[in-house]
Image (cartoon, rainbow, N blue to C red; front, side, top):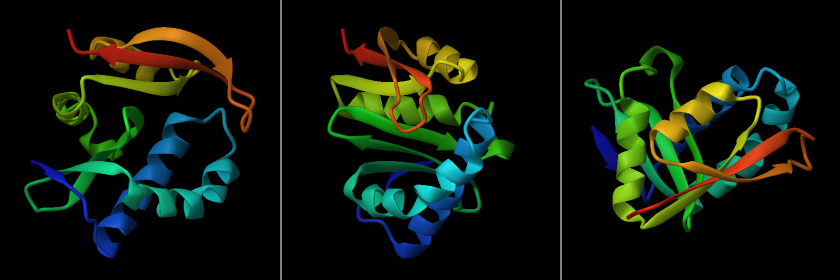
Length: 145
């Protein structure tokens, strides 16, 4: 079940941060774990300012979420044991239902994410280097037709 997480409770924020850190470390083995750990405090401050939708399992626990800032999809994260069950697609559909256009950045080496976003109707519009990680990333976008 998808729920809007604004305002967000401290317990919900802690759960999102756990999902955020673990998911990033799992999806980006080409980036040092210390990079993600070093960004925890900043992300924890930014998340409550974002438009957030969470996916709750049958026990009422958040197992995935999407964060949006304006029309920028800042991230979509799903706990490992819940991946491949359509949760990511549902979260993207929720984001699309609230916006007429969305953009995002994804690392070129994260082929699974690129494939996922393409399947959701996103297209690559440019390529740049992330100045913090020095990794090549794609900017992708989606526009409602």
